[in-house]
Picture 1: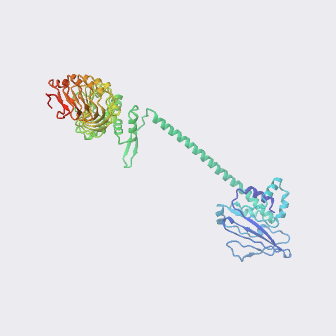
Picture 2: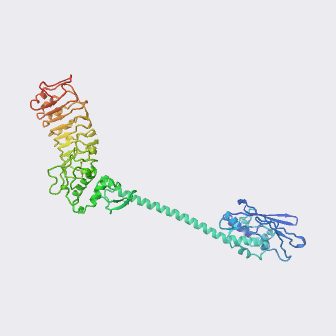
Picture 3: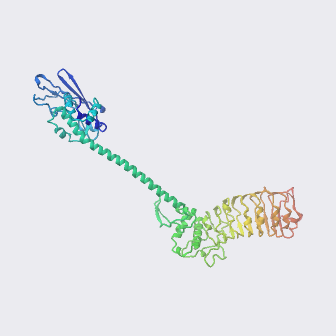
Length: 552
């Protein structure tokens, strides 16, 4: 029967003591055999047999057989009739540190034993325990005892119980060991738990802080203005240093600011860097800063280093009004507002950036007869623009937002000789001052733009060699100022020639070759031939009857 003290410690430490040792007793005649099984879970067994011979009231021998020892070794202990055998009288070699560290690293395992006298000692100790201890002892009766974890100085603790009776000595050792070890293990668990809790708290705090930081970053991107930060450096994979400059103005469009901040090879980045390094930047008013920025990005976008002529371009000490141009007309007004850009036949390549529209006072722009690709910028900011010429380049695509058509003062639009496509919305009613429009040799679609009649000052309409279809509108007859009309090279144009065209007294050239117009040329139109009309028509067609005096 286990002692109350041992059972009390066993109940309290059952959950925290990992190793389990089981002691068994057998009574055979006058011999009591105690077997101790150690580390069954670790597949290691150690047995110790203590043979007490009661012949003549003396102890004959005690034999011990342990792992890693000579099985023939026996130690016989003389026992005095008047002195009970102490715990130390039985040399019980403790398991090695290495063996028990495999079960519980950093600790030893103390073997618990249940001698025959334990039942008598239990009866003596029962009177010293309260009812709760009796309940706990009863509940745990018969349960295997756990191995307690102790430190390296357990031998000294065992020595403290040397003078106690055998059964009480072992119970005291067990109680002493567990009473000292359990608080240390509880403190370790508490620290581990606190560490985990603090870890979760720190992680949650980091998540909150990251959310705040990224939230602020998003709000800054949504803001329409930016803070002008100082330039920063960045090293690329080729070990070249890139300096990131903030936009020279906070009011630049979002697309421009994005190009400046994300692509150091873009025309916008290079133009902004040039602006930031301009020693005279602060001396210019905002509109002139935009004007210079537009010219610089155009220079980079159209490969200005390869122009035939680029005199004084990008020279900080030379006014942009004196940079090279093909025109001899007025370049700037008295306030240094740029009025004219003329770079025709100058080997411009690349594309025209959208920033080219940042010239608010521009009136004349001619970049024709070059090798410019891409689309046409939307000159929505150039409300004073009057002439736009990009003829005979390599430009293509639809006109974005009817590029160039939003300036109400436009007089000349020349887009011929490119690859523009799509449908042109009816915007001509907003161009009352339009005098010349040339859209020939592109890929525009739809019907012939009847809205041209709103341009009462129109002198020339070049619509040929596109993909228009339908008939020639009879309403064109009200364009009394029209001198030339070209609808040639389009098989989709059919029907008869409207007689209303005979009212166009200023008409000097009419080209309908390459169409499917049939019937008879109206007499009113033939009457204009003596007045100087050059009528270009396919007279060899069987289904078309020409004027008698017409010569092609």
